[in-house]
Length: 318
Image: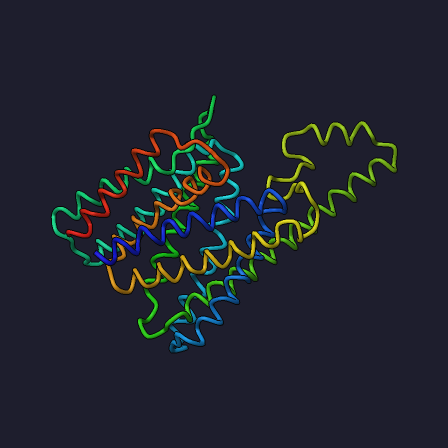
């Protein structure tokens, strides 16, 4: 019962963090939002660890650091695949893979459920797809590249669950502290790489213009992908870090809370159960989007939400 409740609550909290991160990304670049949120979450976890405690062991540090690597890769691939689109297919695909990978790992590792529990997991997986469905008018078929990125992102999210599950029970919040530290450093490195690449592009264009090669500039910028930054590299509506700073910080604090709930759920329950329930994180995003931005919740998403509650109740019984 408690595991099911924690799983659903952590999904809603994760979804809330995504909502805040989405709003912040409208003001500054997603990479900056991710870096700011990582260090904001790290600060919160460091403060919380003073009260919670935890044993600093090689296992706690190692698994926590590895989970930070998988988390950074997952976020990068997620942004990339959603930028390619269509979101209506790639978003639920990412969520379903993120649920299936740790669920399979847990069941193969010896986790067992009552018969009703396996039925509930099936219903929950259907709910994940429906809740994550983002209606798009005239959505095109996804490219192979987009599909592979979505699968890769989901697999890395699933790997994060598995790695956190390996951490010692007496480690407290130590693994999450290492997770945020590594993730934040990697995202700052990514920002630096993007900045250098953008600077080189500008210098190249300036050199072509200075040499009178305006025709070459036009031709090169018309070529697919040439001198055109990816979605995460384009100049945001406002420059600098300040416009979305507060939202990014809140995103990090809320996401850290979700990670703590996830850690608690994994340590008191089954990985297969908590991973599937947490994969319903789009529910928190769509609920907040409906309440704050007045966005409409599609009928298929309502069905997914109802199925999620049914599955959680069945898992509680299991």
